[in-house]
Length: 195
Image 1 (cartoon, rainbow, N blue to C red):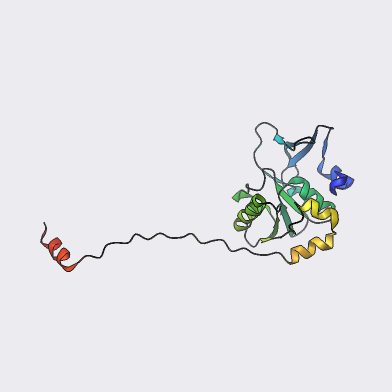
Image 2 (cartoon, rainbow, N blue to C red):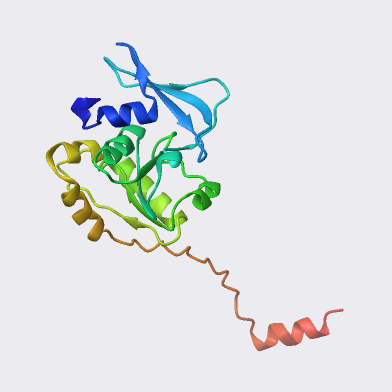
């Protein structure tokens, strides 16, 4: 965790634990009440699983102290930012999950910063379009995610990215029109005579 830019202080604050096989991430609600554990395999392949019966939740809500926050793609990205003094939260279910009921739990200003792959970019737009007044933080393409970016950059660098965050307009739904055949005069007259 230290190699990912996560401080000992944050490891303790979030109650992260585990062994050489897995990392255990406790998920809490806004008041700090325990909801469930999320598990992440250490190696060789990254896999996630949850306590039985758990539902998608927003991770890190109980740690927010600012009037704004960053929404990241993963819990470790959020903890990494918090280790650098930047308020952050994450969905426990990846980049494609953001529930409408979470909007009211967030501060008034949210900066969405997901991974730089196509899934991350699409997920960021979906969350951004749901969250009023949100903006998208664009990471340079040579970094995979927030954690990778913070390994080589400072808090000030990230705040500069926030300053340059953007709004992406939601595409308008295309309306389809049914074109009606224009009636000729004789068809109209014919129709009038038909009982």
